[in-house]
Image 1 (cartoon, rainbow, N blue to C red):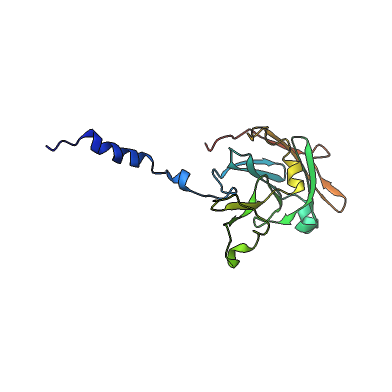
Image 2: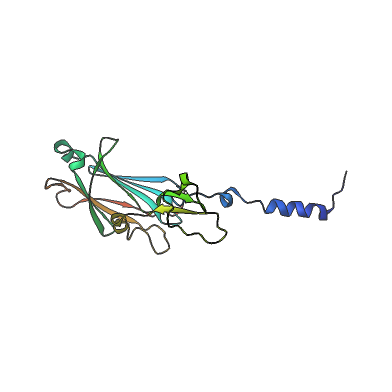
Length: 198
């Protein structure tokens, strides 16, 4: 049996310990879906869908889908949705959905991210104008941020540490002055906080 001196193994063990893990070596964009876990609530003619994108930075999607009687009388893009999340409400036009519904989609975090390296080649330069990098930087991600409507809606969705709060949501639909609102009481659903990917 050959004996190997500890002094011979030490440099090899140290080198193996310094190899970065996949997570440390990655350069995922800030919009990358770490979790992608969906929670669903059906309340009257509405389905509420919350997708937790990244629990560590307060990033989630909210989809409000409507399949009520106003769709029998009006085109989907003639319907407006009223949504209140933890006391902050918005009134937005619906879009025709691919699942035979009218819907609105909201994103609390960055989107449309693009990598801006130093002195980008022309094919990468679009969207990198005005980006200043510190010396010796390999580049940075530049993303679009939530709209003013999304910022307002998600104002109380997360706490100051970016953890999810419980989401109390009220919804109603309107078209041409006619409302589907549970006789003025609004339809209601509650999502409990999800602050991990499990």
